Length: 556
Picture 1 (cartoon, rainbow, N blue to C red):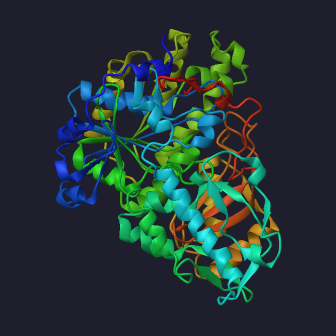
Picture 2: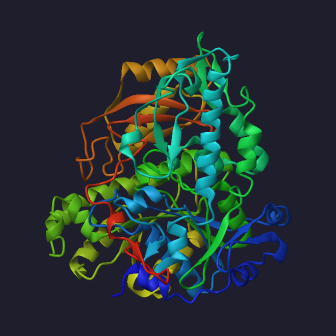
Picture 3: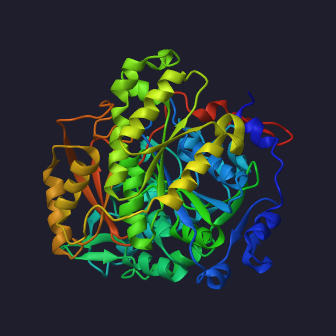
């Protein structure tokens, strides 16, 4: 089989104007970025906002493993399959980050014959949204340090500046730095550091804002530092939100592209699910719901991270009501959870499958806690045996979840028809009684504890002294009614990435709690999770190249 990039390079794309026309968008509602990319402006929203919404389908997954799950591939394939069975469907995805693209994970435009194109553009600079986010974020950081240098009228304590800088690349050397060295003219010396752009509060705000003015208002609420007497200092106090917003005037508009089979796709925003809230923008999702009868979107990593945040953060703020949730799994990944080494996953092993399927069972239970009907999509591999597939199907039936095979990687939309029909059947015949997991008036520690116990299966939560101090401070300052965004390893239901399957008897350690007042949530950081990842010993970048004709190789 051809590589992903070879398949993508041979794609027969339609001009994006045709894709837009098929959605019912008008010529003056799209802004072209070349022949195959466009932004959709808010004129479209004003015209369409009173239309009834289509049905929202969330695609999530089990905890990721080296064996592969194929969540984005399934999302894209399902969208293509919906078109095959005559449904007006649209896909809403996150934009990939350059960090994992050049690191380990690769791009995030799907795979095989279920990809979004132009794949190279999407995985690289795309329409420049991430650059705009990085610039807006670092403008605010520069204004903070300039304020310190120019007299510090707001009485900011340099030791309590909490707004770090960002860049869209994995670079562990920048996690902890000292700035302002070199004398009086070079700034005020202090400790600082960098996070990756996808962990930026600006990214979170972009993805949760309803329009440009809401974005600007949220920017003004960002807490950047504290004074010597402990009072918060905001971007509004520094008069920075206007300049930040103008840098984002185009980035706030969703990006329109297409799949290999010309199904329309919005790709907009890209917060990680392990260190941020893991969902594409509210703007893109809500606009898609006005343009299509079925909108397929995804949340990052497993349901313990992405789906929980999709429900408790995105749906809560945007008033979204998902009709169904697809949980992607592979037989190989379930056997890996059952203790089979990666190089032995092709052999039938029902015993290991029985041990590992508990991970899937927990994710089904988690989705059910939100009142949303669940369907398990097994992303089929050639090595899967009929006995293994039937074992998974039977266990799903016992748990009250629908089951369907997906072969979209090899067959595109044609390989997802069974899954598409199953999703439509659920939407038409099963009522979604969606509700959030917790109420906002609970104490911060109780909200964290609820997520850890109910979703992860923990016995309890241990808070470091630093985390306890932060929680008290935020409650005293009036931020106690915000929802919680958990920062946790994606590889395990627990906060220990080595605990596979369905761990029991563990306690989650919350070592730090950060405030994202503009985004409207608190970030609880667990275990060894890093907001600035590092590159591996052999980064994927080392295998990438481009020739004299501009043909890219090694990108995946």
